[in-house]
Length: 86
Image (cartoon, rainbow, N blue to C red; front, side, top):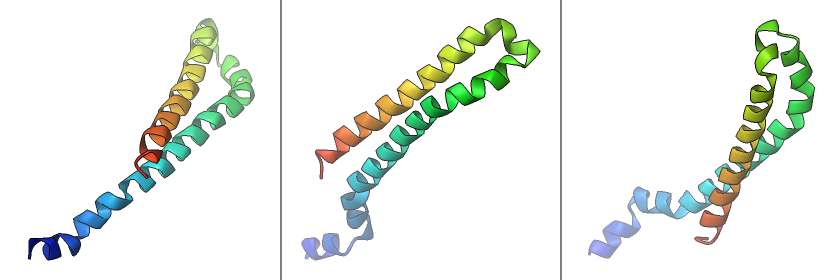
C-alpha cells in the first residue's frame, strides 16, 4: 500500500530528473566560463579607456579570468558529480 503511494508521488519523479537537470546546469556553467574567456580580449580595451579603472586594470583582468576559471571548474565539478549518478 505504501509503495503505491510512493510511485504516484510527483516529488519522486522530480528527484529522478535532478541529476539530468544538474548535468545540464553544469554544461551551462562551463559554456559561460568559456564565453568569459572568449569575451575578455574584446572587452578589456573598452574597460582600459575608462579613466577610473586605468590604475587597477591588472586587478580587473585577473578578476575576469578568475571568474572564468571558477565557472568552468564549478561546471565541470557539477557535471562529473552528477553524471556518475545517472
